[in-house]
Amino acid sequence: MFSTNFFVMEAPPFLLHSTLPAMEESRPLNRALIDAAAGAISGGISRTVTSPLDVIKIRFQVQLEPTSSWELLRKGVHESSKYTGMMQATKAILREEGLPGFWRGNVPGLLMVMPYTSIQFTVLHKIKTFLSGSSKAGDHVHLSPHLSYVSGALAGCAATVGSYPFDLLRTILASQGEPKVYTTMRYAFVDIVRSRGFRGLYAGLTPASVEIIPYAGVQFGTYDTFKRWTMQYKLSSVVEQAMMARSRAVCHPLDVVKKRFQDFIGTKYGARVEQHAYNGMCNALRCILVTEGWAGLYKGIITSVIKAAPAGAVTFAACEYTSEWLESYSSRNGA
Image (cartoon, rainbow, N blue to C red; front, side):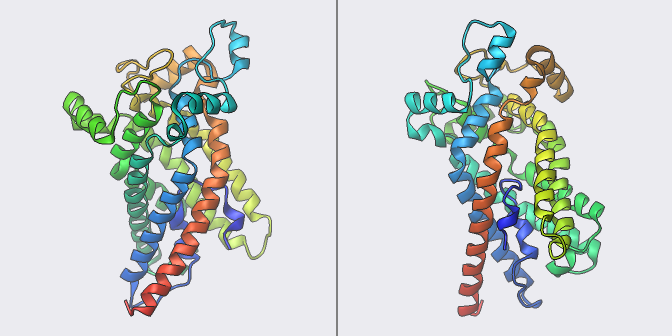
């Protein structure tokens, strides 16, 4: 049922709540708990499976030097960058850090997915219930496109703020080369709070919030729109995938800026991302554009696009099976 929508954002299981069999209206809490649990589990599985691609993407995004051999030749730079392509980065990480290197930061990543998906689902359902005047998920898909866009954007913003510290910890741990700066998530958390205060846990929140508005908005808006067309146009999913790819491309520079703010410890390879290198989001965009060119704003974009397909596939498949199992279990036990 979901095989035509595998190219959407890596953790959008809440989109599925409108497609899953509706439980009795007298049990909305049970339905919400099942969907939230299925979303959290599927998001966790998806993030774990695609962690190697995520680690490579983050390494590219925080690297100040060019991330391709072609870019080095074009600029006439004779010194090689640490990472200059997906295959080269894969071999380098495997050689220097072993297989565990591809799952650095996965624990905080998993901890980020759980509150993110729960908050996103809860806020999205509440907003759509308010706008549609009905708590039935089946009625939510019929909201106008602009209301679906607004609902998704607000839900995405709320989820981003609620889960952001784990996103920051994931980036810091995943971007580390050898030797490590932080050996554990707890050590990183304590050191950040001690040296920068709790505000340090939200470094880069502004570009992250600005990024999620069009990203989540397009994600939910296009899903609801094309879901209504699915029965009439067999190619609707192709158009939806193209829309999501465009949204990813438009938002990627903001994701790069967010990673630069999050990586305030500095990478352990090449030039360092200094703590006060950027004075705000706009200044960061301008500095990256001036010093690294347009290519700098799109570091890691290929890895990000490649990651979208398996991430979406795993998320949708895991969410469907998990939700069906939880619903069956709930029915058998009379919950």
